[in-house]
Length: 613
Image (cartoon, rainbow, N blue to C red; front, top):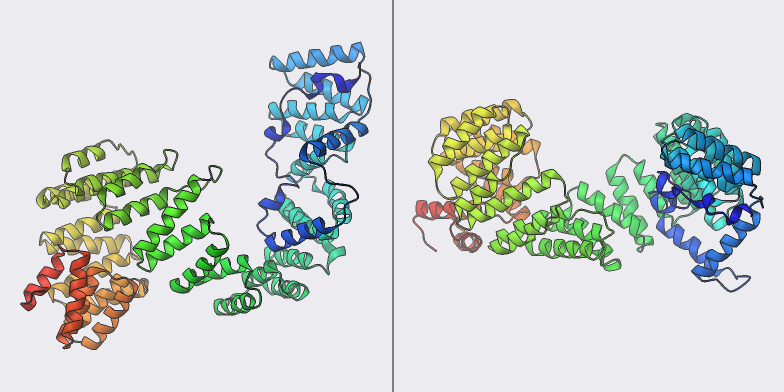
């Protein structure tokens, strides 16, 4: 009886499930630096090479590979003694012993030179969680069958995280040397990714430099050298190599992106990306990076145009749809945001293997539905939040479910939903009390809401978010002293909380008192958050109170341009009314009434001016 006919050789644990290894073949998809266009070009070149024989289907290819593997395996006769040893080892292993069976199988592998036995020994060591013994068995497996891609993958994967990475240099050197020219660049990136997992980073970088030295004229080698320089903190050298890579291959997206990464001047990055995209408009990786740079610069309309261009190429790209949804919310385009987020959720639903969590998009869709008055739709979106989402998201969804139920008029049911939540963390307990108070406030039970928030503030005196909410409720009830005390406590606890400075400054401006102090508070808030339209609204309003109508109009127009909020429009309308542009003022007020028919600020403004629409 020959060895290959005995099922004991292939029984037991499968190494692919046992090892957490990044394999050489799998690195192409895992490596972030591999340019898509380069991979496609290589595939095209490989496909265009005349084949010596017709291509095989998957089944025939698998059969050929199995035949080739069996042809190079040794033919070992199974003696009665060997069979007895193997049977005893397997039974002992299944009964909980691992060391004796492991040593027996490893010894037989050394005697017979059969790599299947070495693999089985490795499986035993894996099951016993013995890293050193696993490595010894895998090393033997590779030495007995160095032509096996699988053996090579596991050998590399284990050695790279050990103390002996020098063993890998001849392996990588041979693979790079024998790789087809069209695939060598990708293999360099894969080797770099593997060596990035090494414990001895300096040794790994030195090895990588030696490995790529024969290929220094290649664009990919120059990219790797740029990344090595960046790891070592030499950004100037990294930039030199990145520029050299781009000169070697002017259409290489990865070279342009590497150059952008090592360029500190953001304006210069924008310029180089725009120039590149003008020459290579189909460079989608660069376009996506360019769009992200525009987002960082808060140029949301331009960023949105770039993402929309990407979406035309890949209509079902979930990342692009999500980015467009966020940008639509930033540009106050509720309908666009709803469209993009709905498509995002739909794409994830049609791709069960996509691990992205739709929960945040679902919460935003719920909020958008609420804003257009569709409370039932808002609840439906919440009900789609998956059970396996993170705990904080589930908590937020339950708070929101209670809020919508209360807004629908069922206060008892809403508070019952909150009562079901039993958080143990003080921060969430504070959030829960604030949400309960908000339900009471929503139902116009202001004294009850105030009493609850007063208790919460005493219980959680170091929670600035809670104190901030308490301050706003106190102002609502005319308790301006309490409001100011709480906001100043927030400022003391969280000096960078621009909302507190803005809230106090606006409150003073609204009451038309201590205007210079109000101006200082709002100016500080605007310095901390210069792009916040609500703080711009406050600055416009304080200028109005101080009689600076032109400055007031400037800030309010800028705020309204960023966010067409009803209250900002009401303020801008009052400034324009006082400046004599009454038709424009009335148009803004009508728009505010259409958005929020019950808006209290609009009623107060019209009453103060003795007007009606």
